[in-house]
Amino acid sequence: MDAVICPHCREPLEIPSELRGSEVRCAACNTVFTVPMVSEPPTVTVRLPRAERSFAAPLNQPKSNRSVWVLLFITLVLVGGMTALCAGLMAWSTNPRMFPAVDPGGRFKLEMPGEAKPIAQIGEGGAAVTGFESPRPMSEDRYFIKHYDLKADADVADPQAILAAAIQREVAGSAPGPETARQLTMHDGYPALDAWYETGPVLMSHSTILRAILVGRRVYLLGAKGQSLQPQMWWIMRFFKSFEVAEGPAKEAK
Image (tube, rainbow, N blue to C red; front, side, top):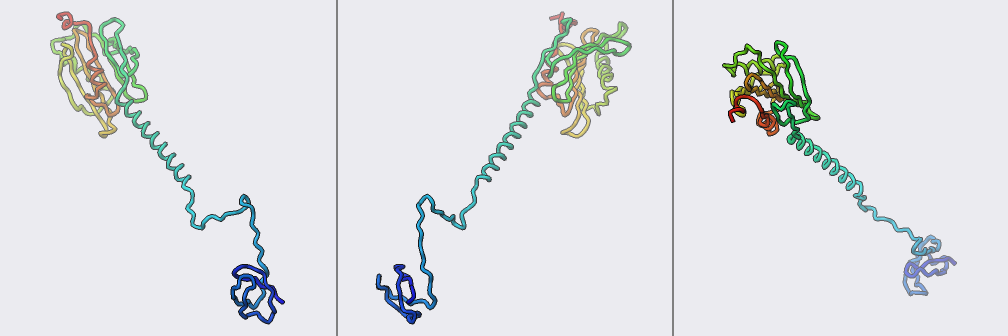
């Protein structure tokens, strides 16, 4: 006798060996089936508790997108940080803080794009040149106000010549490049001369912007030097326009 398992109800049956390959009927469920030629070992099914069962994942389950989202978040943070940094630098470069500068003798006052520091130099013929200098923080820009008295025998009948000479002395040793513009004007009632020098490519040019003012027998020279400066920039306009003198015939006549 051989042991056979019913393929329908899995009931173990015993059949004579000579019936292999023949059709038989299950005594338990009446299912007719063909007895295999080779005996099959009985199948034992073991059911584990639910907590101990293993469940296989589908073969085509998509991979987790967590790493993609993390990378996207880091990218957004970096881009946002760079954008904020660029915006901050742009705001800083176009909105410098203005600092007041007042002559110790009360002869003038103005506002400068940086903290004013006193300067003292020796000018032509040993004349004393004093004033203020203001280097703008975190840049190569430099702003200054200088003043000196003319010699006793100087002819003040031609203010333009005196102002042109003052500008020429300032640019003589600095090689500011070709002169872009020059204009004779008035500053608060005093004769003045503006000059603008620029050298280098447009976006990386180096500029020198000067204004010489004649007040009686005293020459005042205001200057802005730096990269890509333009006379119409608001802080440069404010720097020049804020200069106010408290001496001279024009003030006395008011």
